[in-house]
Length: 316
Image (cartoon, rainbow, N blue to C red; front, side, top):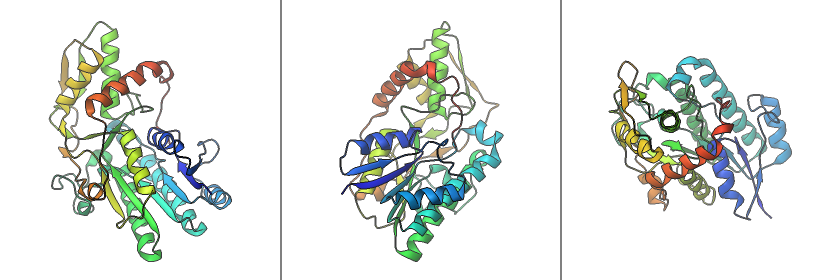
């Protein structure tokens, strides 16, 4: 009998990548619901759905996500929507006896000035980065809920904390997107407008790590296939680069030949976020998509779908 897997948020960037990965494996029967079909913020609706479907594995890839501007503009929604989504899924999974749950978070759960590279043990050892604290607090709560369920009921519930993600179905809305997709769109629009200058936030000095979303999907599949000895694992590539260098790489990929201007009046965010991925690597998982290859394929996806992206907004 096939293993039934419910992927919450299956139409988002992360969820769709996981869907693509698992759909190629005939061991799995996949279940998904759009936000119109199932409001994950509604406790009764989520509970009724989980009890009706009785999945063997639940993968929580549903979240309200966005960059610095979106977090600053909608702090209440970033905190409350994410708390409701994950708490409803976790409580219903526990009540229904779902044997495996994979909770997806973010590297922003770690303190702003935590020692680098970021180890799982760093969580809750210092102050968070102010620009995304609302999202981070919600995700920390999810990690601790997974840990509590695992400790108290001996269930194979696991949290995966990916580094900065990019790839197909990313959010390219300049008001709500993360740095890499925003750069792709900015450089593309500047190119088609005569290679005009591109203005980017901050100094370009912060260091960031980037993981292609298909590599995260591979990590989720890896975790789904085995019993995990611990509750929390970082997922990343294990090396980073300055935002300034990322901008130059995106510029080269897109083919923009104009000037890059840095607006130092805008915030940089956390100085560095490099993940220590040794725990998951020790179990046998490694990333496989280079940044160069990932940028090329993501820009190609953007070109093929850019006319559909005008109304992209933050997803709940």
